[in-house]
Length: 326
Image (cartoon, rainbow, N blue to C red; front, top):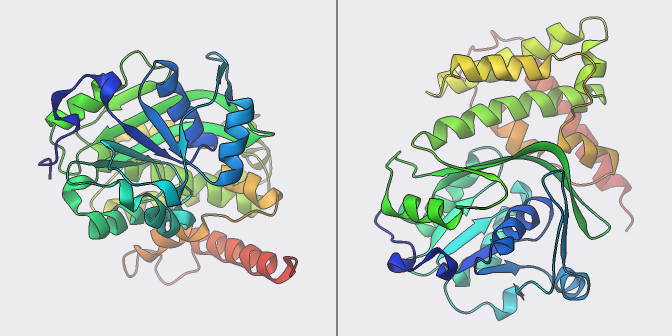
């Protein structure tokens, strides 16, 4: 799987990186790479390209603000030459259109590093480009694109990457070198699939609970039965991961449980923020796909909390489509 080389041994400042999107996630991590003079180009739509040309890429974060004037951008119709690294940061429901847009940038030696939620995107990318070109990846950050600025909302900004087979390959070392000195935490992982599953369990619990209750974690836990509800949903999600061969490690399970049952915190899922602004959501990719991997009999024939959360989100989607302006 690690047969595709990255940049053929040239220095990190000469690794040509294409960041798909310059929104909250792609703009933040791509901007931080650009901040240390890495060769970064953003694949964006015309409106975002004009905005970046006029106002620059602007990041507001407790770890340091940045305004990067006139970052390099490219439109899909102008994309011709292959890049060394494609950093894929789109929403999971936009994956198919994103693939169409960045496909011309994928050459025989290109490495694709996706930062999407869930696991289904890996299967899609493997089928489309070949498993040897696709790495596992994940990021932990809460950020939003507001009035053209990327606002970092929490104190976490981590990015993990690794080969799907766990090998610590030369190209893993090349990406680690590329990210040396950057203002986020970068981690080369020999267990990236395990980490992706653990994030998925946490995120499905967080999204399912805060969207179903339309409230922050602290508000849910302050309500009668709220903590038991969250713990029960976490257990369902954890059980599905374990049945799929990725049981949560005890340290990660404790961390998830502590974060999801902390009293007084204002933690919500970005999916809830999307619901509150009547935006598209990743219901199928975060909740539905996990539910679809449930082994027969896991919920013992009962309506599970996860399925209830999924029904709620699909009802939101149906109402949203019905009420959109024609």
